[in-house]
Length: 160
Image (cartoon, rainbow, N blue to C red; front, side, top):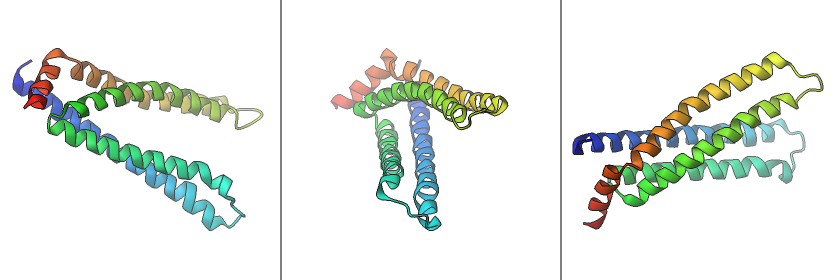
């Protein structure tokens, strides 16, 4: 790998972090509209306990948005802390993907006493396809950021 290809790869990884920030922000908007505003407009006697999980989800997704943005900007500036955080987020993304695939199938499975197996299989297939795309990108990001030449470039910029 040449110095220019490493810089281009870091730019691509930074762009991927910005994409994840946008996706997280869209998730936060969905939680806000569907999990908070929609039940409040329904007027069915929503209690504070019922609003706790959507509020926690909103806080987590907004926090992830900020973290992804900071990592993207840090990678563009060759900040080694941003590289290490991107490695951590990549590992976290791989692990959370397994949980989301299992969770989507289990939630669809436990919704009815007589489950619709076609619906369960289609949900599982869709989630597995989406996860596999992001999972492979996370693997490529991890391999790239753990490369000794990339690490050396970050440490050279970090020491200056």
